[in-house]
Image (cartoon, rainbow over all chains, first blue to last red; front, side, top):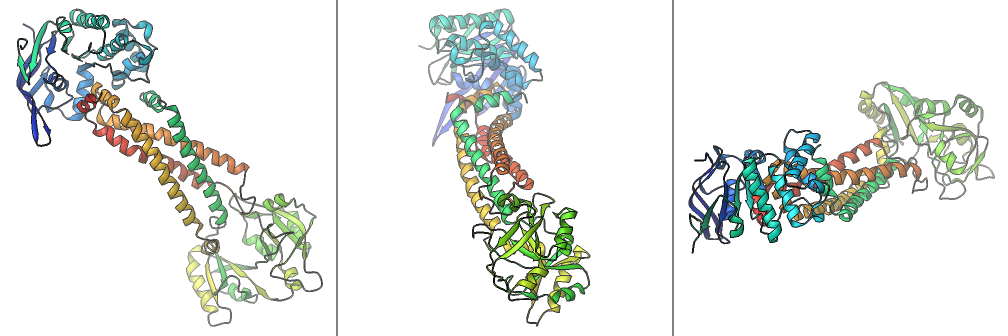
Length: 229
Length: 384
């Protein structure tokens, strides 16, 4: 039995659109074990990304709790959340979201600017992360000079460079062709298997979710253990 | 410091836009420098006015004369250390556009009263020995190519000479220099005894008196006493501090300070809108990126600081170039062609310019920084 790293308890998230209240997540419970690779699947609008944002402290639940490594995330204020994210969370986005004005190396160094590391140490850490994703030959290249797959690898290097507790990936292969997507999934699997990284990956691609150790489904704000019909 | 490269890179994301913004700020500060120099020129004397000097003039206006006999009576007023008189001559050198002030004075007393005008000792002796002698400021000497030994003809507009020749001729015996940049080096001083004897009318009358006090703190008291002594006489006086006098003289042209302030307010307001809009646009374009930075752990305050740093860099670059250019060009080129007694960029105004630069950076970055501060990460990421 894995130690629980993420514990989502009776989570409710609602948005107000004019007079109408939209319930995105309803009384949702989810546990993710340390070292687990979990895929969150579901149709568009099912609340996958919202759940990911709540786990990553990018948004606050309407009610319920989220604990990551015992830390009650929903109780942290904005400043504490920012510091907590910097220390514990690595985000991988669908569209990579690299800074176009920075080289691969500098993009990877970005989260390290929030640490006490010296410039030399930041360079060394970033170089190590780029080596893990197999991009040592692209360190000085800018995002516009790289393919989508390479950009996503840089995004993953940026996510792991601080050695976070949890990797949150929002459709990491959604903007890639099958071959590049497979390479990214290989990389995520390797990070999980070899480095013990806990990964929560949102996807609606069954091919991607097949790489995960466990798959859960979200439909209309409710968690299902099996794929809905 | 470690965030500077990130800010720097963002700044040059759109090179042309950044360059044009910097250029517009630079032009505004160049204009600021020139206006400051013009104001300094128009108000010359105000800044160097002695704290311990009073000016006594006719109560009605400066063009009304006072009897020279007042000199001794003013000297008797308690608190007066010394007193001299001056008169506006208002002549023309060759043609009307060649303007520079000419003032008849008693040489020794005048130079003692105004130590800011420095005249070599041998030239001073020559002036005392030459009845038709005159001294001129370095600026005017350079402008018209005057050399010691020259005879300078001045066509009168107020004071006609008695006798056949209307033109006054002065023998240039000295060229004085100002003790600092603010001292007026444009004037020509000649001897009052020669002037009084040769003028066809108004003998025994002078334009105004300059009084040195034993104690600057007595200024108001002595001024009141002098005015009281001459009240109900045919030549009532108005005594005031030299600074107030020079200011009111400058305001005959217009309130230069207010005019300069009005122009600068308009210019800086425009620049504020231009640079502020540029910054706001730059931040709007990067909403998603700011959201990503926050997702990576950058705090709201840090995101705000990065935007402010960017606007400060633009303002400092523009302000620095503008003020630097103004400082250099004003030294090299006087667009008034010497019409002003002094033309320089006062250090005080330069420092105010530096402060304005920083203020502009803060003001232009304020609202965009506020946008960055308030940006909600989840919302920003949804927009990507």
